[in-house]
Length: 81
Image (cartoon, rainbow, N blue to C red):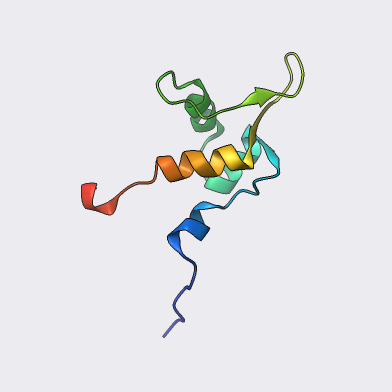
């Protein structure tokens, strides 16, 4: 029998380091989604994933803290699935 995972749900949702900024391709790789999904989250008018550019017309970045908050806010509740 495999040992039980002792991580709490909150610890699992904090998969990004708060003090680091992530590129869209890094976010997509970590979350195992297509990069277009990350861009769609950023462009979402109603509830966008906060992002910034490193310089004019530079790469988009998201802070780890904002990513963790966004994921926590959009966590799926199994009873509604």
